[in-house]
Every structure is written in structure tokens, then in C-alpha cells.
Image 1 (cartoon, helix red, strand yellow):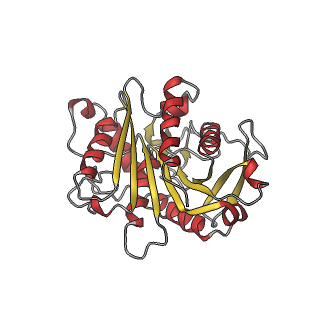
Image 2 (image 1 turned 180 degrees about the horizontal axis):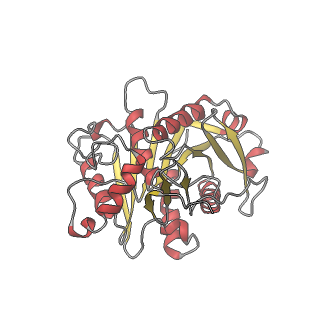
Image 3 (image 1 turned 60 degrees about the vertical axis):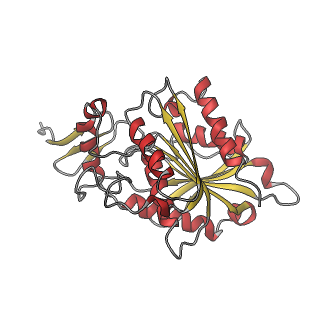
Length: 312
């Protein structure tokens, strides 16, 4: 009988890493295909951005046959999963993004970036930036016909919200190929050494997960996980006009998300920051129970944020 493999790191329910390099992901591996026409009136398709990066595109089906051709707000979306699990092709994300596309009347590029530990950070950041550059290049027919480059938004939840922030910071640098109308950060995966008593109870698991995602990091005050760190680029350089930070009251990441919002407002950044908090809900509740009243209200708030970005 073959001897059991020796476990190097076990972080249930997300990931198990063995000493021989094998990685098991108990969650987030089930996927579903795109749809020519979904129940909410959305068409989707899968595209290859590069040999390493792919995405699922979503568009209101009616826009494909509209005359004259309609230009739509365009959202580049980054899924969550602590940088180690998750996929835009999962039932959770596929259903959520279909609904967002329908309600916001938006074209959405839902990005499949490479995951740690096989591809540690900054791989996810680089893949995500490549997806943004591909989006604004309009090389896909749907994008060429329907993407409104004057209404580009970035959005994501958890680790995807972390990515969204990092991409907005890149967009703020000189020579960026994109001009962002706004970004949406849902339950952002930010951390740091300034922990409350409640956060201290979760610090071991967060630290372990961060070590898996970024083994070369100096720790939890790394600017990639703590945008308020002394060594982080100034928040005033954030390259967008508007920010919506979405918090959940019983989410262990709530305090860091709130601190980010406050630091951004005090940074000298010239944009407008908004925050919305759902007091009685936990992390990523809007994905796990998409039909609940609070998830519906949060979706409405995000849609309003996108819609109020104006028209070209």
C-alpha cells in the first residue's frame, strides 16, 4: 500500500498543500459553461486573453442585435478566494455576474487569473493588468462594438477587491492606458499589524493564507495586503474618479475595509469615496445567498453606483 502523502500546509476549507508539491482545493473547482441566452437575458462566452489568462464575457443579449449599436458601461471583475481558489466559471460567480450585467446593463469581463501557490503574487496582479489592457484594446468583437471606454469600471470581492485596488493604483501611474470611471471593492481582503482584539483571533489563519499567496512577502504590513502601510504608495494616487467600499458588519475584514475608506478620504485623493455596510451579514454573503434581501439591496447599490457614473 502506498504511504499517505505528507501534508506541508492545511488551510481548510480552502487548500491543502503536500510536501511533494501537490495542491488540493476542496472548494471552488466546480465550473459551468457559458450561455447563449441565460434566464436573465444575458449572453456569455469564454475568451483567451493570453496563454496564461482567460475570461468570461457577459453582455445583455438585446444589445447584440440592437440598432443602432449601443455602447455599454464596461466592468472588469476579479473574483475572490484569498488568491488561492475561485474561478469566474464557478456557479457562484457566473450567476452573480449574469445578474450584475442584466441589472446594470453592462458588458462585463470576468477574469480568470492564475492562483497561488503554484503562481504566487504578483502573478494575479500581472494577469489582471493584462486583462485590463486586453479589454481596452477592443480586440474582441463584443468589446469593439459595445464597450464604452469612457465608462470603464473595476470591481471585485475579497481578494478580488484587493486586486481591484492594486489595479486602480497602477492606473494612477503616468502613462497608464486606461481612464477609470470608478471601482467597487466588496469586502476587501486587506490586513495589517494594527489589529483589534477580534482581529487577533483571526490573525493566524490570515497570516498563513497570506504566506501561501505571497511567500516572498515581508509580512502583513506588505503594501499588497496593507494599502495603509508606511511603505505603500500614497492613496492619493489612486487612478479613478469614484470608489464604492462595501462592508459586512460581521465580516472579520470589516475593520480594515473601513480603515481603508477613511484613509482614502484623508489622503488628498481628489475623487469621491462612498461606503455601504450591511450590519448583520458576513463575508461574501452576497455570493452564498444571492437571493436574500440584503444581497438584493447590495446589488441595487452597486448597480446605482455604476449607473450614476454617467454616459459617454
